[in-house]
Length: 512
Image (cartoon, rainbow, N blue to C red; front, side, top):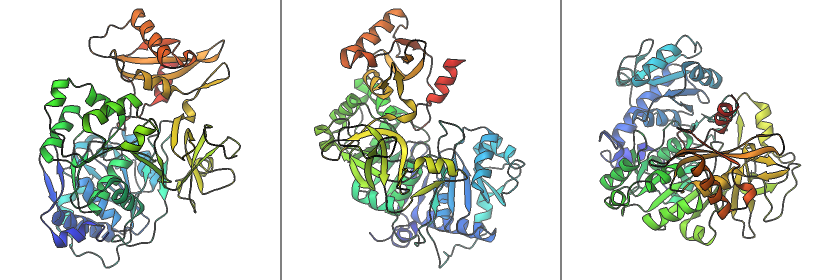
């Protein structure tokens, strides 16, 4: 595995496309990526940024994000990509909490960015690309004036990303820096090569928002291995099929809601696109309903590879389609770290028994920045290097992990634990359901009862009849105590762009 950063490919094949925007056709070659990221590294260095410092990035999906990523990663810096949908005060909180010394923004985010300068006094360098932003120097001008000779010492930086904050204020996940040079592979690059087959021939469709962990890190891994990133502005089911066909994508990464949207396209629309170039369709970020995955395998072939991991980077499981079809619902076996299932008191549980899912490592893999309590809560009571993302699951006799739900979402009704995910999975492909969320709502008799919030599909008529039909449908598939007591029809559901339901927001809406 030679290479490991754009400089290698810039030297060998400078005109090779490192990334392309699917919508506009804008490209960046390895030669350009190497030159611009080196120049930006010089600009950051000249402003006094040293290894361990933080560069914050506020942008929609843009090829400039990859330049900023590589400038940070080749300088021993952390890159903190921020959700551009946040309000100025929320962005300022992340910029200040991370201790960012530089803030780089897209001119398309000018309204938010202009408000930030007064709220982020510790930032030493403000740069804006793609147009003028008050209080920010021009990115293009700054890098054009900089030397494009790489430094002799290029320590490997890392991402420091903030959890989506589905509960409370977002927390920065700060991994330890390895001390290795940027030319050496990191864990994800090695896993991407072995588990997903990334190499110089890879054409990788990235439909997710670049401020999320998987899109940012996987795009980096593709370029560390000399492939081509196809970045979408944002996900759209038919546009994704267009991009796969047009760019002859070999790989792509999706979240289950994207699969659901793809399957909701009319059959004649789906059949009109050539997806035969796809060799691996990676999916993660949220549990995928069994039926949804089966339908995707029927359509795209046995090319789905699922993994389970988190922003925390504390471990990973993976499973290919052939294995998954023998164990539907599994998220695979550990390929990084070892999985341990533990009771609340920390005791390890036998196969088949659900408990907290921990990844065991030799040393503590991360801390939550400025939050020792949250860091401690993620660690096993006896083994500090065993850490959990807050999910519940069990291992089967062969060591395959099955996730039941997140601990925070468990409904306790009449003393019985109910995992909403199971009920949501049943309803995901009901013809009358466009989107669904299941939560526990206060119940005077049972403590909590199961409530489904349904965004009806086009043409479905919400009302008491459909409510009864949905409840009966769930009871026909799983134990009746897991069926919703009530169904509420809503115009939309709060989802993050990673496709995760923001249940805290749904509960807040409901309790008002």
